[in-house]
Image: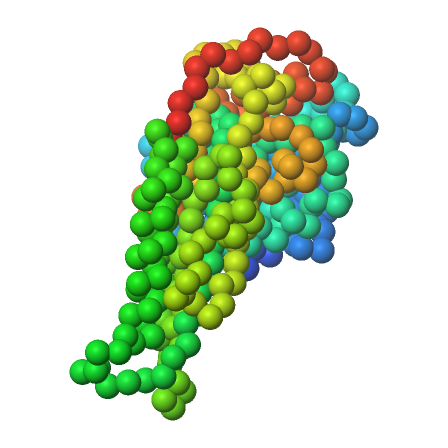
Length: 355
């Protein structure tokens, strides 16, 4: 089994959120062949372990993908398939990087479920592990790593009213929903920062109207991406309420995460990139990851790393370069060994903000 075949086998097990069991079984089989001890937990996460004792280095990948099966194929230097970037490529790289036990401590590679929806896999890990170091498996480019993610506040606002003839001057229930959304959009526009990462942003996910006799019910789902400096709960308390919905239900509440440039995980990955011949770039991303959830709960700092171009996430053109997979394996193997050994590391120099 050559290294790219590990990724191909993971891709061939289609695993949209909520239907990951077959892919987790494939992950466990591959990990066992690579020398790991394997298990699953109550949430259905796949867990692969090498070594023992402290420090514990946990690579938090995710094996679920968005909907939409794609043909898996190797074409030239590229591997195509749903999840090649987001995020089976990073997961494959971590498995391959950790196939040799560290000099001391333990490497844990997790194939988490539900990252694309409710992070149920990551939540199940919070009480089961207490790692010293955490790396989230997300595409950052083999020579980049993500040290910041925006938070996420997703809300379902419900508006109730009575049906009226559309020729009357009275606002419909849908009108009220649209007016509230417009007010929310204006509030968000007042919080524009110097960069996308430092700005509050807003999207309407869906608006749906249902009728029960003469009673109208409008449900609007909106999503706000939160910059550092504001928590999800605080933002929820600040939202305009006057003339608005009867109820506002939070569907997702994740605070933003911003790591420290001097963090040992950041430094270890940066050093690994340099050893592999690259120049590390530190990204601050406008998306959200499971790192936002686990880092504060475990009281650790960390970073997200993995091969792949994040601009291909969730697209039908998703692919990973075999050479980038190979380089990412070398970067992660260096980072695992450096963190396990507790060696001193230089600090990174270059930083960018991006999507």
